[in-house]
Image 1: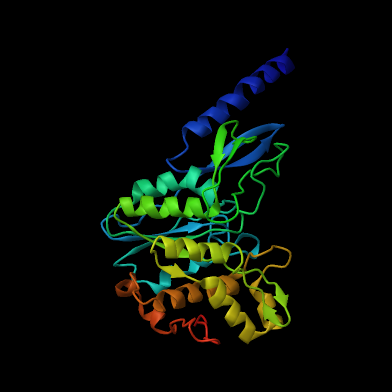
Image 2: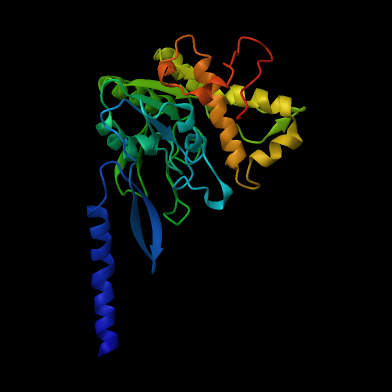
Length: 315
């Protein structure tokens, strides 16, 4: 009899507890799949919010190369967004890293951007970096633990693909990588914020003694989006790879986690954060210039008009 009651309790508890979790999901919170006896339980990942809402805020959005997990270095992996705040006067501007691992431009725009957008006010800033997960499958054949259904159509065009999303169980119109970035730019501006576009950080890939660039795909497409929408473009893909060329392949190895794709160690993330600041300082008009801290004074502006521009190194 006790065993029968326990089974009935489990049948009631699992779905009810799952509904409770979903009901508690904060606006814009992204959920991640977890396993519970074969059932799919979705766990909220809340957005971070400005420490002082009265100040302007810089919202950083992107994937795990910007913020890995909870931003505490799990598995030795860090994102560059975790090390950007010291380059700013945080008594004058909030630096809010709301990037989330596993997201593409599509899934971030669908699931997490509404919550970020709701926090935007005139005078805020949005710094985005996407691309690493956009090359994933648009839809999955099987809804297993590895399924993400997060890919986008390649390029910046107006093509669409209609799917029945195997994970969300909803009909969805999928757009291009560029379309999602353009939507974020337009919607940020509608809220009075200034959007800025980063190209994606590079992998630790080499060819003929040089770090491999991504000009022919997501880095190049991000640049196209920024130019067409007249948004500031931070070509950190080029800035970082130029720095890698100077350092050499052996010295670059410790900047990455072995077997973890583009995911960086602490030193790698710090290097990338400095390169983001170098990119900002290299803009003809840097919208964040007045908020930079003394630490940023030690970073030279990136000059990509010169063939071998020296990229910034963290202090």
